[in-house]
Amino acid sequence: MVSCNLLKKIMMPLLYILILSCFLVGCNLTHLLNPTTSQSSQNTTDAYVDYFADNAFGNPLAIIQHPAGVHVNGVTYVSYQGPNTHPLVAAYHHKKQSWFGPVQAGFSDLATVFQTRGKIDSHGKPTLLIDDLGYIHIFYGGHGAGAKYGKNKYGGGGLGRNKHAISKRPYDISEWENLDNVSVFGTYNQAIKMDNGDIYLIYRHGAHRSDWVYQKSTDHGRTFDPAVSILKHKQRADIKATDSWYIWASKGQGSDIILSYDYHVCWLRNEGPKGLGHVTQRHDLYYMVLDTKTQQLRNISNEQLPIPVTREIAEQKTLVARTGDHWTFNGSATLDKQGNPHLAINIGENLGKNTGGPKQTHYYYWTGKEWSQGQVINPTAKHTNTDTRGDFYINQQQLTFLLGYKDNDDGVIASFTRQPTNNADPTFIKEKELLRRAKANWALTATIENAHPDAQILVAEKQANSQLHKIYLVGANGPIPRKAAEARFNVNSSNQN
Ligand code: ZN
Image (cartoon, rainbow, N blue to C red; front, side, top):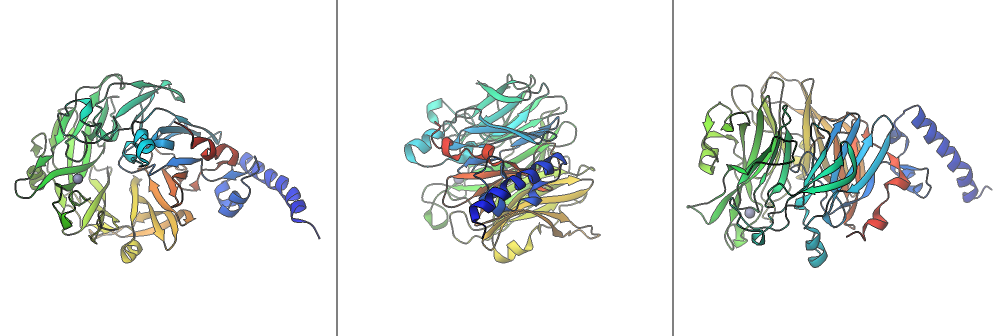
């Protein structure tokens, strides 16, 4: 009888040859290597896995800090939160099928929170942008900075300075320098490059009780103009709470930036549901447009809005949908070819938890005359009342969502496409399952800027027993593989500062 070891000795070179030949002819390893095979063969230097790193830390990815990745000149550059909340950047060369990095691109103040209190503050996960000269920028580390960094003109609270790092050379992630040129008070960075190369950084200027602002750069991010407030936080007169907001900003047509947002009623201490004070109570969906040429805000009906917009103005002029008793978690927005906005937002019942309860991704769009009724993307998740999160894109008028959700005990990443319909209420069907892992919860990014079809989003597989997670670059064919020996950082990375 052939021993197990002997069988392995015979089989491993064969597997190596198979993998090598497969790469030479360019077939997709994702379909060849099932998860069991890839994990059991991790100990050989020649094996491949379908994640590119295993050191994503805490809640390492989110939709709101975006873009987290950019595809340019055949390379997809990605960023995520690494050990101790420091920002990491990696790059994948599509033609060579080779990975570089991750490289630590800066030092986050929020590492101190983890080191001194053992608490992971994931608000400062990186946002990545590549300027017209090819330099790669990341914005990271911010969660309001706090009063010790001076007076916050547009809000307050928080800790962790917002920082900006830039690659030393174009299209090269190996070395970085810090540029001390954006407000330290920023949280939830969203970076947009306009057609003329101007860069807009949009963020919340502090913790919850802060305005949303933008800063503009006309020199490829080397300097930024002072912050301009566009959406105002304000103490309410009718209840003991402060108006607060979550924005998702992205490029619109021409000189426009589109903004979708939801409302956070930020209860004062001991106020609100059960006297819990601040809980993540959020409602409703809003939409407006910033014209960067005129620096004016307008609503969907082209009415000019005062700057900054207050809750009263938002409700009168920019409302897309009321969610009633249900709570929200904001999603993304994009335009179709005609310039009509399409919006995603996560909505769920309030079950009395601090977070309300699970929320499912819903879709709204402007028909040209009015806002559509909201449609749930994955009805099964609504039925079982489990969370879904994700982003979407429009390609040749086909609208596709990429969602992460739970299917019983498995975590699944799958695409859902909008079905052609003559009425105003489109339905979605699940098109393709891209990744499935037992017991996984997902953290996902927004879709990668100018995405290659093979590399559309980053997802991190969060397992309950670990602070460090496997991270995948996922596209239409599933995750992009990497040599197992190259993808393992976990052992060394836990000791990084
Ligand atoms: Zn709050």
